Image (cartoon, rainbow, N blue to C red):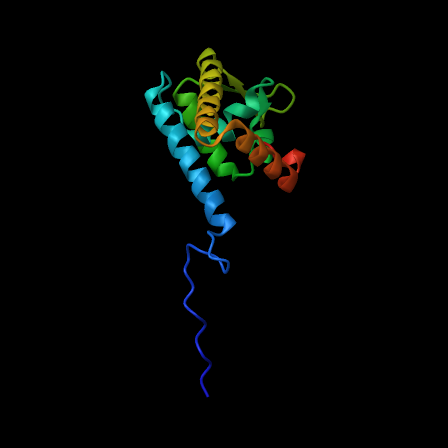
Length: 158
């Protein structure tokens, strides 16, 4: 006896005929990233990507940090963060020094160029969000932010 095959499943729709939420979230994130990256390439900042800004630069807004603290906060591997820090240092966004209290630890600090990059990145995020609000309305964007915050929890914003 053979088991009948399940009905054909369309990867782009769920059982209710609508796109699965996970697909929509992934496509929305990809769209946001593509728009942000295009704006970043057109900006006055060279040698920076979304990954550099979200994994390293944003964690330096309150001042210098140990590299290990950045790794712990951003949720990517130590190797990835180390490579990003090295790239940011080569491109003049950060300086890497030794911790006075622990010579094995590296302290990462923003340069003037890194501070400028933070301002530009923040402005570009706001521009993309503004454009989304222009397309679908400010209230739906606010509702989406609120719904995702409730779903994920307050502490998951960064």
